[in-house]
Amino acid sequence: MATTDRLAAFDDSVPTDRTPVVIDVATAPPPKPLTRTLSALADLGDDEVLVQVNDREPTHLFPKLADRGAAYATAEREDGVVTAIWFP
Image 1 (cartoon, rainbow, N blue to C red):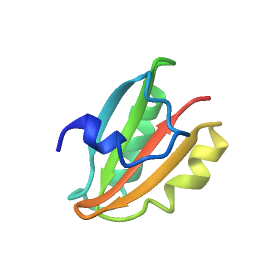
Image 2: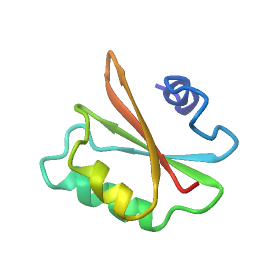
Image 3: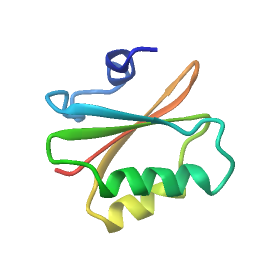
Image 4: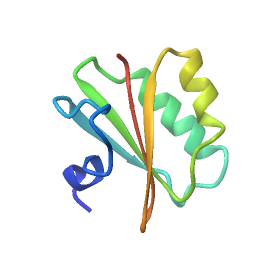
């Protein structure tokens, strides 16, 4: 699926004027989805939005995003769950 299709799953709260950085952790065993996402977030630029593709909602990730001051939005799709993460 194209990156723009993944971003189309979200409402207007997700910044679409930033470059998407996509990581697919759908098949990674725990805790890899969490650690890979936090590692990618640490390298995220102000002009980028991190797009995590997962097979489930990353509930353990949300408090860690809040601790880091990151905003996020999650959308369920037929092919999994997509979470957009950015710094406001």
